[in-house]
Structures are given as structure tokens and as C-alpha cells.
Image 1 (cartoon, rainbow, N blue to C red):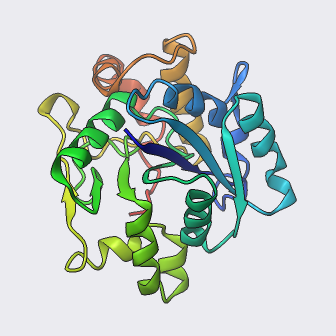
Image 2: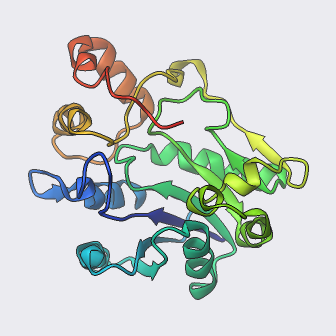
Image 3: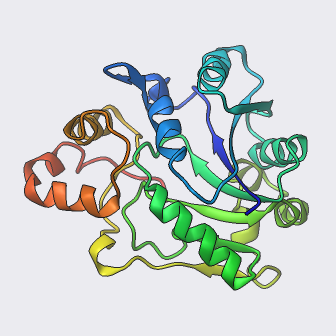
Length: 241
């Protein structure tokens, strides 16, 4: 299967600067995410798409240390950055993951790739109608589709949100949303790294697995149902829709 995972990563976060460099023991969150993504079976490579700013050189070091590809591009024109990364590495199909989802489930990513492959669509996601926890986000589309969508990216918002032009022009693209099975359904659960409270919350989950990488969304949900007090840690964090 010709699928490339592209991770958008930068250090200039408004709410929690340098958040992906925060560490849990020996791993930064970005490195931990990379280790998880290496468990995806249906993708041939992982590419970090970062910005030209020198402050992101640490991201490039992490990519090299983990023997994955890296591309530097525009800070604000993210759709252009991903397109250029795709062209540089001759990507056919892109699996978009954001760097603030450190516990995203490799099995869900594999399912999304298989669903995309079977449905012959332009764009597939599990976030249009949210059913999975926030932080299990995955989008799949072809580089050709992203290039086509770029002509609709007229405003800064459309250029900063990589797939917004696709999602807002569903009459021009075949768009599919996948829905979680019941044992993974928890749309209000926040598993993204947005604020310091999220760091404290995600740290508990990751340390429970002793920094191991091979666990899935069901495991996390079952863990949190047994440790409901943990949910209070980041329950007040507002998520960007």
C-alpha cells in the first residue's frame, strides 16, 4: 500500500509553547508519537512536516534520531507545506496526523487506510462527525486531492487548516466519515496535548503502560473507566473544533 504518514509539527504553540518537547522520562511527546506510528502496518513511511523557523531544529534532530524523513516549509501556509512535502517524497496517499495526538491508536490508523482503500474516496476521516475520543484523529487523502483543494484555499484559515478546503467543498470531493464501534465511542474524551493539564493527564496514561507503545484506544478507555479521578485533571480544557 502506498501510504505516507505526514505529521505536522512545530514548537510555536499559543497555549503551551514547546509542548511536543515535553518529556515523560526519556521520551519527548513527539518521539513517543513517532514510536507509536511505527506500529502502523499499512503505511510505508513517516514524514515530519515542520516549518522553516530555526526554533524547530530540535524537531529535525528528533526525526533524524528516529530515522524518519523531515521537511521544512511555511509556518502559516500549512496546506502548501504538506503539498511540498508530498511532492518531495513522491507520496501518493497521505495519512495526516497532528503532533498533539501522542496516544493516537495505530490500529485505528490502519483501519482508516483500509477503509479509504476499499471505498475509493477522495478524503476519509473519523473527525467530521466525532465518535472516537479527541486525540484519535486520522485523515486520509491523496496528494492529488490535496493539490486540487488548494485552489479553494483563499483565506488564511483555509491555508492554515490543511484539509479545510476539502471538508468545505464536499460537493467537489467524495468525503467519508468513519464511526467508532461502541467500545471506542467517547467523543467528549480529550486525549490531545493542548495545555499543561493535558500533559499531566496524558503522563498518567503513558506511565501506566511503562512507556510501552503497543496499546490501543479500547485499552485507554478501559483504563480511564477504572481511574475516573484522572478525568478531572483536564476536564476544563477547551478544545478547538
